[in-house]
Length: 239
Image (cartoon, rainbow, N blue to C red; front, side, top):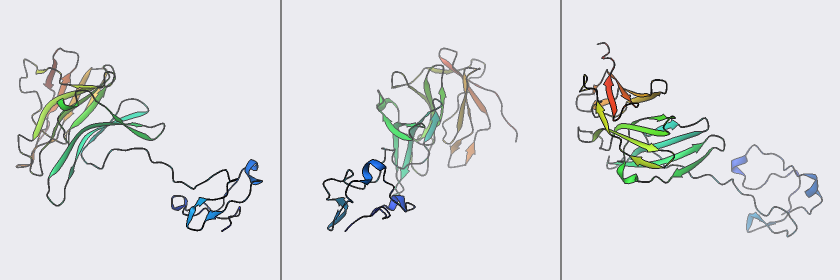
C-alpha cells in the first residue's frame, strides 16, 4: 500500500484531528514510504527517514489514589504526598507514604526517593504545607484506618520532609505553657497553610471521628521559630 502526501497516517487515534501529513522540503524528494501489509504501522521502504508511527511516551505518574496532598514548593514544582485507595469489594484501604514531584515546565512526574521513608506512616486525609525558609514539607494528621475510622486510626503527629537532604524526620513539638491543649487532636481532612512572615503553620478543621461526625472549630498555630516547635490556638469560632 502506498502513502501520498495527503494520506492520513495509519492508527493515529491519539491525533484524530490530523488530516494531512506535512513533509518538510528536505524529505519531499525521498520515495513515498511503503507499509508492510501484515503490520500497517511499520515502514518497509529502506530509504524512508521515519520508520514507524509512534504515540508519544507518557511520563511515569503516581498511581490512582484519593485524599492525598499536593503542595507547591516553588513556582514550577508541586509535590504529591501519600493518599489511599479503597478496594470496592472488600472495602479495605491501601495507604501510601510515597512522594512524587511534578514539574510544571515539562509537565512530567518524577518519584522522589526519600531517605528514612519508613519513619513516615502511610496515610490519607492529612494536611500539608511548605516552609520555603527551611525547605520543609510539613505534614499533620490524617488516617491510616479503614472505612470506619476509630481514634487509633486517626493521627495527630507532625512529620517533615527536608527537600535538600531528601529525608523524613519527626521534629520535636510541644504546646504553649498557657495553652497546654492547643495541639490539634487526631483528625483527617483538615486544611493547612503557612505564613512566612509569622514563621508559623496554621491548621483548621477536619473530621475528628466518624462515630459522631465531630469537628474542631479552633485554628491551631504551630510556631516554627521556637525550639521545640510550639502549638497554640487562636480562636474557638462561633456556634
